[in-house]
Image (cartoon, rainbow, N blue to C red):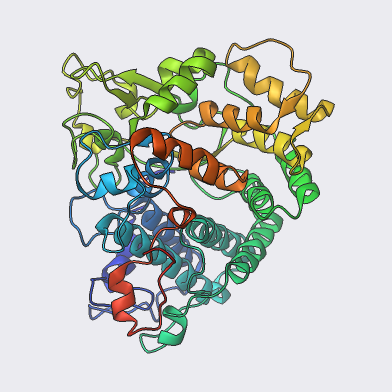
Length: 474
């Protein structure tokens, strides 16, 4: 299921957001009201679709729209050693140089967009009592998975955050503008994912599932570094759920709905309401910007050295400027773009490539990580088996007898390149300061540990009248 905009979703018309409003508790702007809407399973499922719609984001160029997933690469992959802007100019280039400002509009868009998704999830959860006994737990699990997914991404990017676990009023500023400790946010994330794991089934890759909740909860445990056994058990349940590596690495991205993908945010080609723009933005001269998320020389060399048969699917030479390297995993629906790099058989700004959030290769490599349990190396057979599967698919079939932490981190880099994992992995493995510090030195940038967190958008601090406190260094 990719098309999230259904007629039933007139609820979208009830809410608007602007830079002058508290978007965690928006004012209604039409004569319609959500009160009295979520009265049966069909309407509640419409609210579920509305959450996915928020994650999908709006494919437009408006600075006031919520773009959500379509711009997440700006605040993740481009803040690592994997990608950069092509021009080195503008707000995107602040990420290149570890010099993001609190007034950065891309950060403000991200923060606003993802709290909007949390609001949508809370709206469904507030009305879950109107669902049938048969479907109530499924709907609740789906909404809680999506809320947890968003909060997990945000807490790793911003640190302490407002904890909004219900629909709040415009006057409840002590909730919307008070940053709660990271531990409190993780408590909600874990609670939500435990519920989802216990109540969801496995089904469409474009909707939350039990396996997705289990895999995400395992990643939460690995990030916290306190429950490696719990992570291992969850991952092994996923591994017994019927997922498998696609024999051809390219098919992971261009044969959508394949056996490797566990959860992906769905898009549809050629439909303004359900397409995405990030595929175009990764190219030269197409989309809102002229070349962003370009491959760094550091990442290019890592993939050339260890990518095996993943190289051509992962990156390609810019057809206009051969000295530049582009991300290739998300070329619009696999098209080669022609000789000029921007001619497709449809408008590349209306691409339909899904955004893969969780896939089986990630699960296998997390399985190795869980067995390593924060150590420097493992030779446990189960870990080696999982690691070997990923390597074998890449055509790197030498028998592995042990795996070090550095080898695992590098394997994750080349296997999951440009899928927004690199920054999170560096932080989780405890290597971000050293690796990003060294990388910054090679490109003439300045890096400090403060740069691992994004700033709270300055506009939000202004709206809070001093309640919101800024992260250090901004």
